[in-house]
Length: 106
Image 1: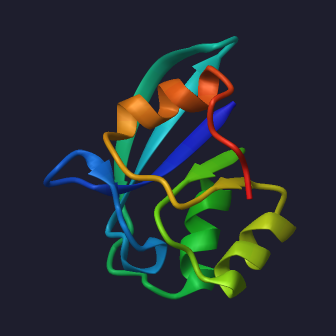
Image 2: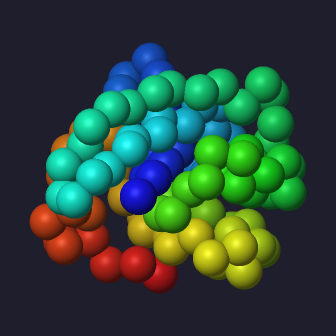
């Protein structure tokens, strides 16, 4: 399983606005454990189609993010990616909550 977090690299927290994210923190999960993570820049992409394409390139199964527009949410959901939006806090902590079943998808 691959989890992407819309990432504020300076503060190591989820970016408050999906469409303003400059980085994704990708987590590879086997079973219920994170085996590695990698921070990838969006190269200035801000359009929902470009951000969705990055998620698809990295074979993302789930997205953790802050606020997300309805249009972006629909586009990403249509690609089979489960979205956990409205999240705040440290990236690693949110992934742990998702793996513990404590985050609710939209």
